[in-house]
Length: 317
Image (cartoon, rainbow, N blue to C red; front, side, top):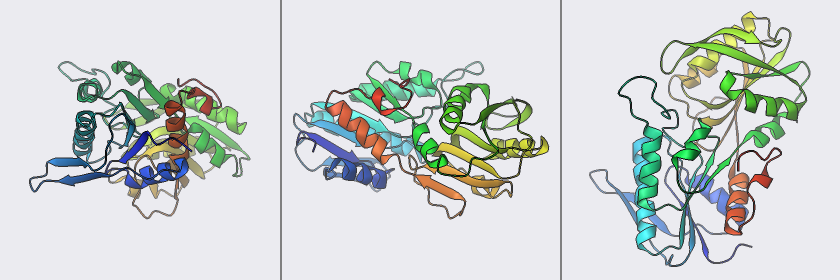
């Protein structure tokens, strides 16, 4: 049982996930009243003493992104002014992570801006899951515990029929994660090369590895509009893959028309986690929980224990 000096707060974006984390830790969620003023401004009221406490705010910065970021900042400020000893931002899904560098002239690096705002507000640590760009850890001058849901996804997939399966990385940037999953499942790895058509959509140009006569398991960090992934599915089928393709991603961003696209007949199953609440009704979407992973990370941070020991390959810090 964790000591009384820990306080776990739920942001409005991921309240159910926060409750599940609290259940794993044997804690009650601390009393934090999150509301809005009539004009839409965020209001946070801490309704119990946090003086000298180790505080954790669980809040994904998913849609509505700007509102949820602002709510998190207000939460941090409220805890800082209430004399919390340490303020930890638990951000299962880190919004703006795709804006991690300048692609063309006069563009902002918004992920760095978000990091600056969080630090200025008063956070002491960030706990997050499967950042779109790992280098975002370096945007912070406070510790960042970068968790991964790969073991959760892999654990589920190991219980399925893996005959004739191949793990497919959607691009070279995800090859490391693809290799880890392929090793976990004991199957081969293939890598897609894509040509970008727009800031949000790409198309497959060629593939490294054998996919013909195989059942692909495509791994990625997020599914947004599903435009890129459905074109990849079609490309794999054209290359002779069995049209029973499994998609596995940590973050179900699912911007319309994602659900319609995921209804593609060649997509057998879509496996995601609850870093972002999924409120759709597509039967092939299977949601796994990261609550136990987050609870373990929080417990280890609070007890000054290693976080990397939570993973089969401790590469995340």
